[in-house]
Length: 198
Image (cartoon, rainbow, N blue to C red; front, side, top):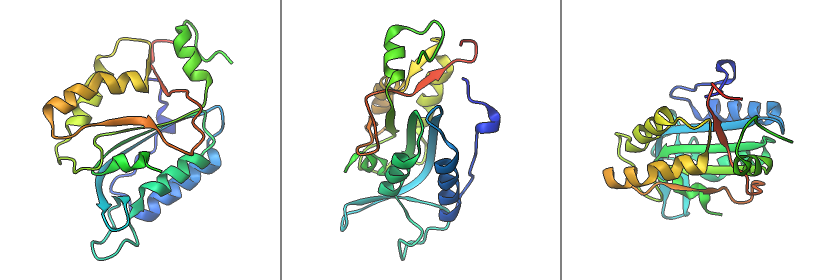
């Protein structure tokens, strides 16, 4: 796919501060001409007391939430990053809580052109408000569908629905897909573009 290696940033076992620093950079550098894909794999937790979902960075401690990363904070960042399209893919327990509260291509079908014209802020998660197994069936099928795809243009919605049933049939989880509310979504979609097209 057309992801330039110089634009890919990998955070391995990031601490809370590492995540915030990188999101701050994205807020400053991403423009309305850019598309942004954020992939998070790790541990998450849901607080029954506060009805808040968290991702747990490597420096998170069980005794307090000081370094727990709120799903709502990610939603706020996504709302402030001025990309054309942002897609969040989260493979972590309780990630489903993120949902609460010009011509772009040559030879693209009209439907792809139309969804690309509009701004989008979408999320795809491996589950809803439940625990996700350590072995990620979601990740397996995500990679398989992207690898096996031979279409030049693949929307995130089409990608999701191509793997949803397989994940449900092979794990205890029900993956989720939709707009991230109150972040500027206008009904568009993130488009995966194969390298051999343009």
